Length: 275
Image 1 (cartoon, rainbow, N blue to C red):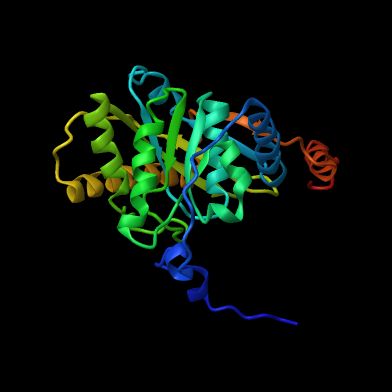
Image 2 (cartoon, rainbow, N blue to C red):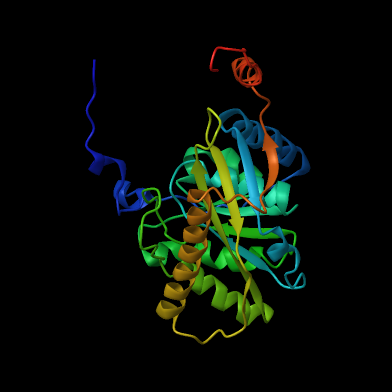
């Protein structure tokens, strides 16, 4: 039986908590060494089983940040894998703990043990608890707040990238509380390159250090959205041109048996055959 689905049904501009009109009790992230170990095994394995490789560049932008102030990473949100990718970036590249805002966390309560916390988007007032918690949680410099400022999943490479004002609010309040805060744009995309599985490509952009807590929030949100859009567009342009210079490999699957045979056959030259 063939099931037809309208493309319009894949994406909605209404957040799930608002669409379903369901309240969710706020509970902070609650990590322990045991559950972090479990999360590492689970989220590493999920990514490595489904993707051929994860490659990244721009690590120095993170390493050369002011390490005495909090850091907030922000990335596009285009599919279900974005949170798993963010976890791997934060833990395996940055060697930090993620603090990730998740809508409808009541459906996946164990994610709290890995660093997630809920946000209720039924109204701006309902979201405020999560926003305030975001400011407090980055006081621990071992934590990185990893946020999707679009606020909802958008189609791949949707343009223009537009942010809700949550990131700007958090950044301004954090700068006021801590003196400064690092903002780190991260371009993430998923490509089929030369392998039979897609690859995750990550470009870590240049740090934005926020000190001014009085700037117009809407204008600041637009600036941050344009910064992320430029980071993502540069990444897409480079990869479209076959330019992978500077990328490091976090993991790469071993070649399957049929790919090994394929590569072996390419090395065989049969005289007189034209091959």
